[in-house]
Image 1 (cartoon, rainbow, N blue to C red):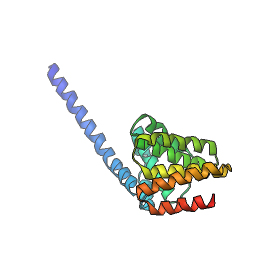
Image 2 (tube, helix red, strand yellow):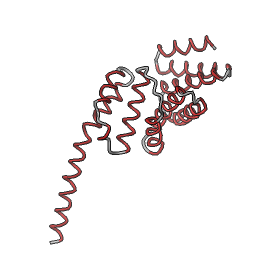
Image 3 (spheres, rainbow, N blue to C red):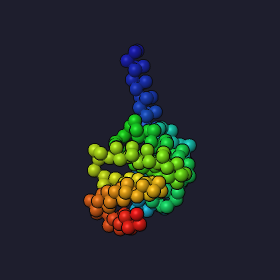
Image 4 (cartoon, rainbow, N blue to C red):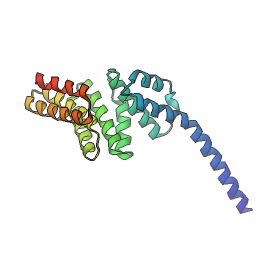
Length: 193
């Protein structure tokens, strides 16, 4: 009799698990598709993310991935977020879970939001955290973005030598990443420093 009860419990647990996985499967797939499009087609990525009913994001992981994808697509779509509520979700989650690259991305976009809000100290701290996370990750494009953002803050504070050095570091990173468009942007910033 005990064996039958155990089998019944396992069956109910499997059915519940399968139902929950099938429910979150399409959401996970949509978020991943938006992440892949965030840089190349941010408008499409945002359209995908807007189609997701955020009240269905039940786990911290889903909310963090959604938040990071949304922030990234907004950044590359030139939509400046004026609240750090989404970036904080991503930072808090990816500091504890996930890879160093995910944590670095979360910190970078948090820094961008803080910069938009003129919280320059918080922005610099976030960029420095992103840089620290990238020490063991081969992501020259993201590291270039971090250096360039730091250069912008240094320039705002009239620390022109630091600004120049940060822009030069960003240029080197973009060259390693093969991102000529970003190299030109950094060269322009160097010339204005």
